[in-house]
Image 1 (cartoon, rainbow, N blue to C red):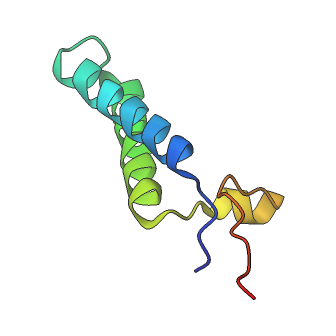
Image 2 (tube, rainbow, N blue to C red):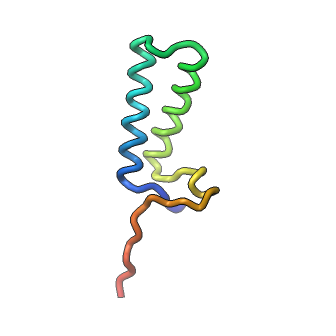
Length: 71
């Protein structure tokens, strides 16, 4: 898998996932919506840890900074 997520994107996903988990355990979100959002949070954490988003590859998007080739 080629990395297609930059550092900022990874941090944003982790913060959003932490916020969702916090809201769920504070009983602000619950029920079916809470479970769906927990699954989304899990996906965010997983994609952040591996620096690869399958949806980005389908769309052809990459937030990973381009590295210069050394001569």
